[in-house]
Structure formats: structure tokens, C-alpha cells
Length: 300
Image (cartoon, rainbow, N blue to C red):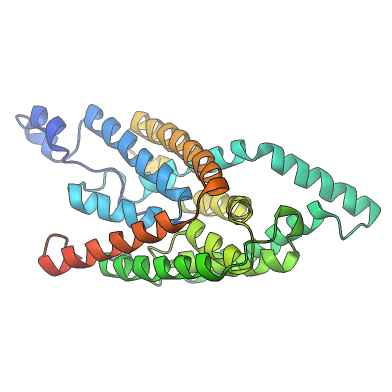
């Protein structure tokens, strides 16, 4: 799962002008401004959470460029990630029911080779490393623009390499428990800001010879427990720290809508196309950040 960065902020010029006459408005954005920013932040979070381009990277750079300071600090972003959790649960609800039902049948019949059983156990063992390392090293690496730039470039090269050498011969019915463990270990790389949870798991799956749609689908299913638990853990204080409920609810709804659309689009896209568009995008994104840091356009 991707970590939250500074949340909804103040200072979107077209909406802030109307508040300039009021002395207190500069200290805190108005309801209209906060709600607008919640929609935009939900859009960024929703799209980038499930595309292999890193939500943490885009939220950090986005807020730096616009100069939005935190309304609820990181709690706001942590809270609106509930929209992403709801979206992935709804999109894969039939898959989840089938996996749980098949695994229950396998348990009753002691059929340990049943597909649903192997997938469920694979998801379980793949979730453990992310939760353990996520808890131990959650604050070990700072969310800096330089780290994000370097990591974005590195991940673009890894995804490109996976695209080049991955066999892409194995479908969803060929998944194993070992796949779950290895993809889960790949998921732990997302603790580094800018890696992208979906990007690291998709890349790992392709290195293991999974077809692109299979790697993406398994990436999403594997990420459900991690994303849900991490979101609950990180946002336990969210509702106490966010002053206005309306922007928070709007942010969750916006995140849900764009998360759902991003999942549906990516799975359809990978049925027909390669991941090269994300390779080149991440390479350009990281390079642009590096050049902006050198030029002083973005500050650490």
C-alpha cells in the first residue's frame, strides 16, 4: 500500500481569491475550497493507487507544486483511501466469493491442489511480509522528492526488463502458493516512497512468467488485505483530526469512483497492450522531478 502524504491543503488560487478579504481565511481554507481540493485529491489518489505509477509519488509532487498545506495533515489522505478499499472490494466481489467458497470446499474435501485454495493461501502468505515489514519500517524512508525521482526511474527500468524477459505464459489457473509469497515479497518494496504497490507486484508477477492481465488481477487481489489493514491502521485518528466531515466524505467518494474506473481500465488495457506506456511515463516522471530539483522548481 502506498503511504499517505500531506493532505488537503489551502491555496488553490481561483477559489482562494474570494476569501482574501477575510483575515481568518488565510489560515484555513473555506468549505468550498476544501471540498474542491478533496475532489481533486480523490482523483489523484484513486487513479494512481491502482495504476503502476505510485500514488505516494504523485500526491507528494502534486501538493508541492500547488502549494497545498495540510488541513488534516496526513490523516485526510489516509482517510480517503477507504474509497480505494471499497472500490477494489466491489470490483472483485465475485472473485472473492468464488475464492472463499472454493477454498472452503477444498478444506472440507482436503483437496489442497484446488485452484481457489492455492490462491487463498498464496494471498495469505503474500500479505504477511508486507504487514510485518510495513509495521517495522513504516517511517524508515522519508517521503522526499529526490527519493521519489530516483525510485521512479529505477522502477521504470525494472518494469521494462520484466516486459522484455518475462515469458507471460502462465494464466490465473496456474498460480501457486509460491507465486503468492514471491509477489508478496515484491509488495514490500512499496514501503519505499515512489515504488508503487501495484507497480512492484505487477513487475514481480511478470518476472515470474505471469500473463499481464493475470499479474494485474492477482496484484489487486493480493493487495486487498494489505490495503485494508494499512488504511485502517493509518486512519484510526482521521475522523478526530479532520475538522469538516463534508470534504472528507467527498474525498472518499471521489477516491472510490476514480479507483474503480482505474481498476476496470487497467485490466481491459492489459488484455490488449503492453506495460511500455507506464515504463516511459515513470521514466519521464522521475527525470522531470530530478531536473526540477536541480533547477530549484521543486524543493525537498
